[in-house]
Length: 228
Length: 243
Image 1 (tube, helix red, strand yellow):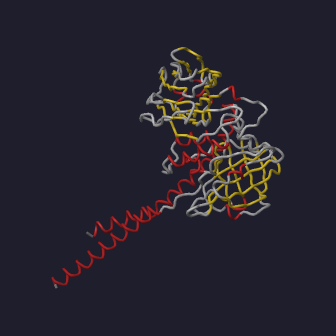
Image 2: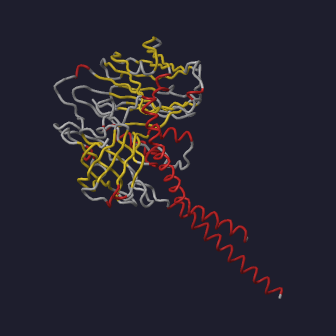
Image 3: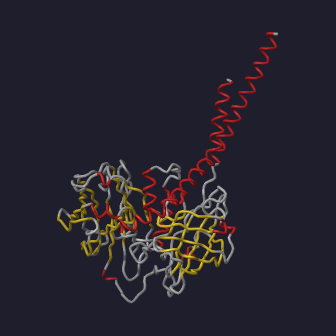
């Protein structure tokens, strides 16, 4: 009985630590992708003619359709985490990774993936491909998890203030935005994704509050300059 | 008339053919041009999962769509859907094969032949045959659309580990409804004028709290502790008795 008791406690501790361990591995995987980004972006640019982070707008899929697709995918797909970055996963994510986004004020830098899906959101931020292209006129939307782990992904996005910078690097260049507006909206208020041809905007989306999220935290930024 | 639209993301990997993710979408229509996007869905080694049925207009029969479990050089795989016009009027539709992510080289390397009702419509690399426009379908008839996907024999290990995502769309329109001057119901978010009508919700970006794991952990730790204490007490009693 003594042995069984010890085993149960050990297994219990393992389960207790599991979420934190998963977060640790996911964080490491994201950092690995970020580390590989400079090299991978050059290879992609050379091998594939580098389609950068371009919008698919005006093509076959409207923004409404993309939002509905994402919604359905999240309902259907298992939220199981792929915490270990296998070679296959890594290759796939590298293909999907089209840049990275940094918010220095909250010490965040995460990979930026093309298209929102369950896996991409585990490792970083995801660009809604039916919104405007990064750095171009219109409203480019980027979503990321309001992770439970402190500081991971957009966990601290509620701490940003207007005037603070958002930096995004894609294969097209490095773009600097400045935060102009922070709001909390209902999930149905998709009009926050609308833009205008007169302004180059960015919209960051994450859930609010952290636990049992019922709303979305929206951080809007305005394009300042392209630094490269 | 309300149509539904569906699209599908397919994932090819060397040696394995996978289909990832249902990308179903609710219906919408553009008032100058009725649009129907249809797709299919199935999962690796599973029978087809979805038959798409529009409330009016078209039906998509996808029970023979993408049940491929191996994809290697020299191999040709056939996959098909049936598009049935139940609208009671003549429609035309476009077929689109679109790469949405992954290796462009791999996508362009694969060869495809598209057949409609056993009649060859086009062939070539996937990149060349990505759109076939203006396929007419008369009222109350059915088209069988077949894609014969071929992995060229001379291609080898250089494609190992490569992957791409592809989307298959069937875009149908009723030309008689077209009024070019009228704006679409869903307008470009980048367009200044007009009142856009957006559907859907903002992406779900909350993480589920790991309550389940914590509950199991607490149960196991408490059980283990109880057993240890019980064991210790029993051991003390035996020792007392022996003394």
